[in-house]
Length: 199
Image (cartoon, rainbow, N blue to C red; front, side):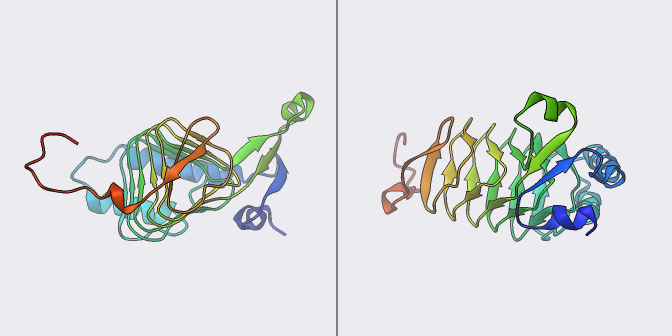
């Protein structure tokens, strides 16, 4: 099996640095560089580059520069995706981003990892696991999501969190390591009555 086929599978794997398709990473770096040079009014150009870079690019995918990724072909957006400044996606495994995803500035989605034993790290032995962000998820500023994690539908990840385990649907989760704080309820509805002084 070609190693890119292993990378595209929705399961974890081990690798040696020599396995990784450096030519595809170079292509992604070039496309990211071009994307990050675009101006705010160049929406069509940005869309064209994203279609070339990402494995699946929904028309309502909006990414603010600066943006970095390892390969691009392993990133899949499935509906409206709003990704703010300085996002990094290390897509050595598939990253699926659901509909109505809001990803704040400084977020890192990191599928890739390294060997625990230092001698193996020095030899370039690594790990990788997929990341799934389900529909209607909001990820706060400067969050890190580690490989193997699924964030459940409608959940919110608080700013600065490190998510190293699955998060269920419909909750607010925060911290390092990230843990469920509480469920999201109807009491969280925002009343757009401007007679209120503050919220």
